[in-house]
Image (cartoon, rainbow, N blue to C red; front, side, top):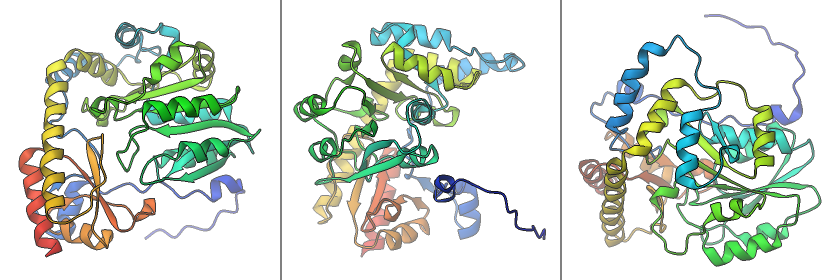
Length: 367
């Protein structure tokens, strides 16, 4: 076993104080450790239907071109999205997942000591990106599991540069509605960017969900983030995008590395946009799965948070204990202690047979 001497290399305090994002182990490794087989993963909000067949076919055709660098501008993907969203090319930026655009936005606009406001708990990348840049993460507790936009607005100071709104919110699945977002935007002063993170946008069925792109088209300092990782089933390829005022997009691109989106991700995303049947099947699987799971759990007397995403929270008492017990039955969910919700687990909607297996295992565990 190697023994490494301690290196006395100075590291800035904002980096030293960061807690790394905790990655999960591969399913194969968990099965080996626990001596189980055939486990199901309902922990990472992935698409249980997998990627679009059109995307897989496009990847196969592109394999022989891997000796070439990818298109640094994502030209064809940008052209397609420009047509779908009704915005010009210069308002769209692509990233290695939408979380890269969060980091680019922070790098472009946040100076050491500047503040960024966000809900808590929400997407774990926000405070990590802000603190890594030497900024101050101003975290506002959720109210009834939803963004407390009124309190978030009251936290705006002369040092505020960015406000993150995760809609639907991860990990709660709750959404901000039209009227409260309109009132919130009126309270945001000039010079502050509102980042609308809409990774689960395509799953939303609520009629009062705000049209964030309308604000971008009006010239407001709003950045809308979306991804191909969730409903499109391309999480393993890491491709997301941001839509913003051309000025904001220009500054993001100044700090963006060339070739940040690989060739296979680009052709897969382009093909996935054309596969509307895959999109509709995913939505139907999700809505039916939520109805079955939430209804069954509530009939058992468990409290579940209303959700507009492809996951939900269920209050189980000791989240870690239930997680561990489910894990030993080959059902992988997400414990919520790291989000300061120790009484909850987060469950991703799976295929019908996976949902039934989760429920059977859950009944056995809690009994």
